[in-house]
Structures are given as structure tokens and as C-alpha cells.
Image 1 (cartoon, one colour):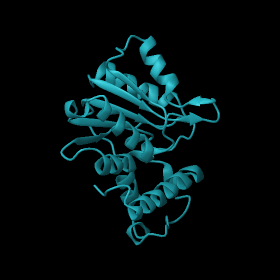
Image 2: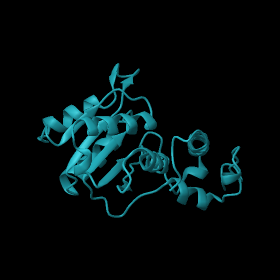
Image 3: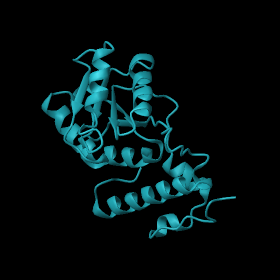
Image 4: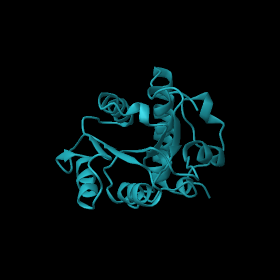
Length: 201
């Protein structure tokens, strides 16, 4: 039985969607996870981003990887720095791994990353960006990339599951935390769409 019989938000767009439709809408994942750049955002829960980033860079052949995330109150340092340093320690090339540590949310992650890549003269070398984020953020990350990265780029969703939360595409509606996370994500999408910060796919 579902934790709640239905998921209601303030948006007409979402209020009549079934659980299956919501799952398909939010939890995007591309089968082909190759690309020119993996952009890793939201790195508070370290293990998931590490496993997915390692897979993309060393196994899937993604050419470059960028870790984006600002100050974390728990670790008292930028979110992305530890993962960036770990990649270098594991043998990744400094010319292929980048760090952006001034952003506080997905919108800032992508806007600051765009600025960084532009300043380094790398944007013209990138045709496909793989967005690495927690599973229920996958759509919003793609929508933000579409709005703020150059027209003509291809964007892929390469999400990871957070072991601590345990929320997946298949089980979110059976748990209280899954329901909270999904409802919050739908409300964020509605808010950012209305404000013009993201673009529907």
C-alpha cells in the first residue's frame, strides 16, 4: 500500500499524476552514460557520488569530470573538495578533473560550472554532459542544464542512489522519507519553472 494514496502539490501539472507517472518523470536515467564531461552536483552523501563518478571516468570513458559544491556545515569545507582530491590521489589527471566550490544548490552548481568552463575555454570542446546527482534530482538537473548551458549540447542523466535515505524509483511511494523527498522535488521544479530558472525537457 502506498504511504499516501496520492501525491498532491500546488501545481495542476502534477496533482493528477499517478505514482508511476511521477516516478518516470523524476527518476531519469540514461542507458548510454558516455560523454565529454561528467558534472557532479550535490555531494553531501559522499559514497554515491564517488561510485558513480569513478564508474563514469574510469570505466565509461567520460573524458573530463567536474565536482561542484560549496561550503558544507557538517564537514566545514566545500562539498566538492574531498571528492576532487580523492580523484587526484587515485591517479586522475589534473587536466581532466575540475573543482567548483562556490555554489549552494543545483542552479548555482550549473551556473557556476558554466562560468568556470567558459573562462577555461572548454565549452567548445564539450558536446555531451552527464549530470551526476541523487536519483530524485535527475530531472531538475537536466532541466537546469538545458536552460543554462549552450544550445545544441546533449545532456544525460547518470544518477546514484543514496544508501542513507534508501529512496529509489521503485520504493519512494512506500516510505515516509520517499514521499517527502519526491513532494519537495516536485515543488522545487514548479517554483524554478515559474521563476524561469529551468526549462522543461
